[in-house]
Image (cartoon, rainbow, N blue to C red; front, top):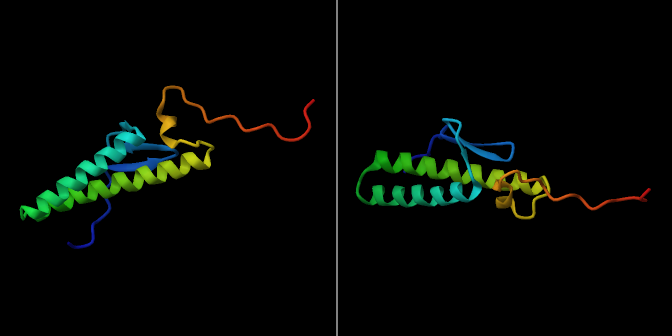
Length: 102
């Protein structure tokens, strides 16, 4: 298969995964959909549908890339479990106090 062009349909922005329509996608859902699109790409390629395989593979790669960038961003922000940030009104765990207390 030729090199896959970038898919603008999914991207990571500041600890979030968004679709081109602006819909937010949870980290767990992005990972699950990346797997679904990846399987669809394999099946389409096996059936000889090269164009469909390419579209599915691009979306799988875009979702997987966005999910991993999101997870790295969340870990850098202090989340031990990056998927926990998708909970409603989630806040990163408070940092342990440092220095002398007043």
